[in-house]
Amino acid sequence: MRNHLIFTLVAPMGSFGDLAGHELRGSYFWPGRSALLGLVGGALGVRRDDKSGQATLTVWKTAVSVLSVGIVWQDFHTIQTVPSARIKRPETRQEALSALRRADNGVITRRNYCNDCVFGVAMWGGDIQLLEAALRKPVFVPYLGRKNCPLSAPMSPKIVSADTSIEALTQVILPPFLNIDTKRPKLVITDENIPGGWTEVRWDEPLDRAAWHFGQRRVRVLGTEFNS
Image 1: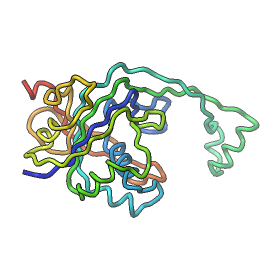
Image 2 (image 1 turned 90 degrees about the horizontal axis):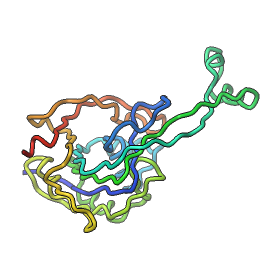
Image 3 (image 1 turned 120 degrees about the vertical axis):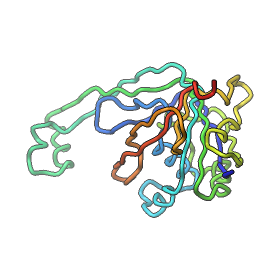
Image 4 (image 1 turned 180 degrees about the vertical axis):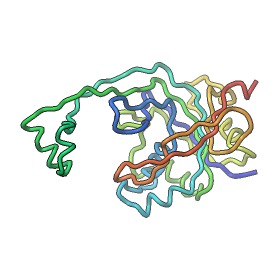
């Protein structure tokens, strides 16, 4: 048996990143490791530029149960980028961006959002008592991927003992207005090497929060068939 900290993420909208630098953002349909560490780091009061504080978050292992993702829709943004011709010149990005006042290089980007998000989360490997207290009274306001995606229900953190993260996730506490069976998630994504399902490579391991650098990791993904 192992102790896990479990909690619930419920929001009208959620958006979860993929590889940065592309015109389409938010193509994951569940919060990855970087999103979860960012959320709990904010609850603990760890700032993005606090490298020593960010390093303390790497001890955590994570698992997510996807209980609902609703309808996926897109929002559009107009942004300015560095003209490709100027990228080839030996100058800083700041100097290149300053040229945009003289030559606009606007592009359309798309952001994916999921409606009616409901996720269960299990974490282990760190100080779960400290993290439980932080999730009950977070330092920074938690949100689901982007700041325009506030939570719509308490996270209800709880410490449970379970043999696996799969078992721990069945015990997450949902708000009373949801009629969802926590024992039958659509997907479970876990750091554990659990039999069944398949392995996926994700680029959501935070390497440098200030510079937005992320590395790859392998996760196990299990579908609803493992409950049948």
